[in-house]
Amino acid sequence: MHNFVLEAVPTPEESREIARKAIHIMKDFISDESLLHDIDLVLTEGCSNVARHAYDSPAPCNRLELTIKIVPREYVIFEIADWGKGLCSKSIDFTMPDPEAVGGRGMFIMSELMDSFELVRKDGKNIIRLTRNIKEEQWLRKE
Image 1 (spheres, rainbow, N blue to C red):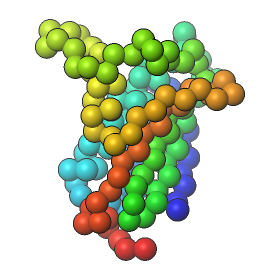
Image 2: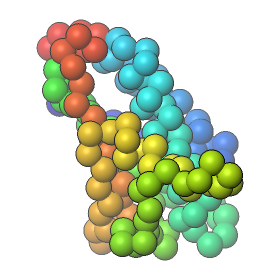
Image 3: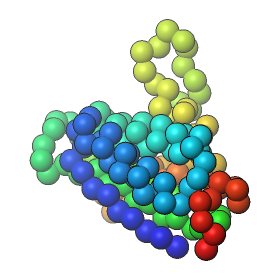
Image 4: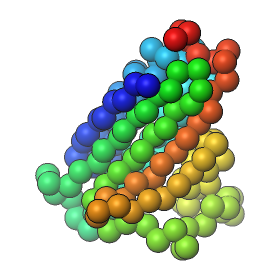
């Protein structure tokens, strides 16, 4: 297993940058460009949600953490975490909104592109845990 932890102050620019760094790491393990694109979309959406919604106001002490757990030839787990106000899983709508809606597509996109989607709150930490099973032929190297 391989573990990586990336941290940033949750601003729109930094949330995009942390997703880019994660994809850079993933390129050492995954060969499928389409899969990498899906993962980039999911991580960008999840990290930008932290920047937009987790904290009441921007502050240098606010934190965004992205943990990557890679189990070669099996799966990848991404955990997007913050210490902000958190999400109430009962109030989240995982359906696609109307075409005219300005927002609200993020949770739907993340849940559709990943094999598992979990919301966890532990010791004041809010975590979106996303798991993606990776097919044998999508791995770059065999371990």
